[in-house]
Image 1: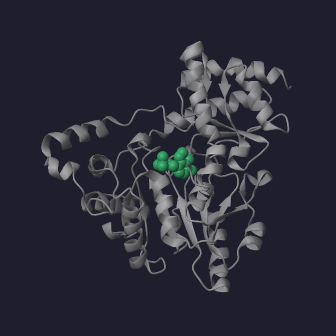
Image 2: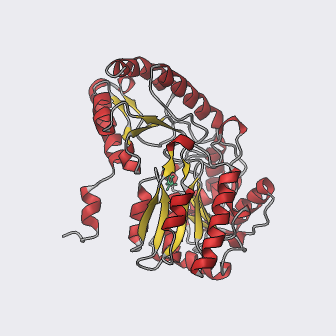
Length: 395
Ligand code: PLP
């Protein structure tokens, strides 16, 4: 018999995962080249060769007891130091290995952060539309998700007046995801500054820290050289969650980290508690072999041009067909307005052409659909005539 807490999760099993499975079924029926699966954020770009070479090199040269053994629950010292050094070089910061805790991807980074900071009933703000798992992660620790909307006319930037109203003594954190899944927008420096100023003031009012949890799996995926502000520089109580799932195409390896800056409230205590949270969550530590590979590949570049090209082609083609799309600035998602009010109806209609998209209501963004274009360029090209047939139903 399953727990009461699991029942709603089973009932609302992830639409994205269901789509992904449907895509695989359709591919078997019609052939993979005739299915246009834009559902999941699983990068089509292979991991860099250097990752493979690093893994082979580690297996050939390192002591297997080290490679496959337990280590400090925060992760290998060398890996954490390499990450701190890389961040310092890029962002002019002064982190050490002590500030970095290796985690099982960004999902685990956020879970461990939440486990470390929230008491039952504490509220965590999510800015809609948002990555649907945030709500589940918050509820894992009996926290309460509070949704603040963003402004479609203003490029899906957060509505600060609403944020101002919704923050209260119970507010523990605001999750910020930049570049954004699902809208593909980047919050520029002035938005992060405005958020920081508001939260500084609110912290004083409520008398306790209000954290920014900066969820950054798409940090390097910024187009046309756009700057993604590094949030710790603007707001002391920032906890960063990072992942190599997207930047190095390693989602199945489950590797990421938490960054806790010294400037954050009681940083030492937080780091110790988060390290224990990593252990007692059952993860114990991030997978060892891929940690060692990351240490060797930390300076590897993300293939941003690939996604930029895909995003541009799809945005131009769909806009030309009459669809209204948000121009992607980063990540690898196109956020498109549904031509009918009920976007689920539109998603159903697209399935007739073997086009799979995710309804915006799965991200608390009804009326829109998310098109995940981390697919091959050929899939995009082949899908355009199908999108044209779909468009004819509406325009
Ligand atoms: N946060 C966002 C915004 C995501 O889009 C994803 C994955 O798609 C995650 C977190 C989870 O990343 P990971 O696979 O590293 O756990």
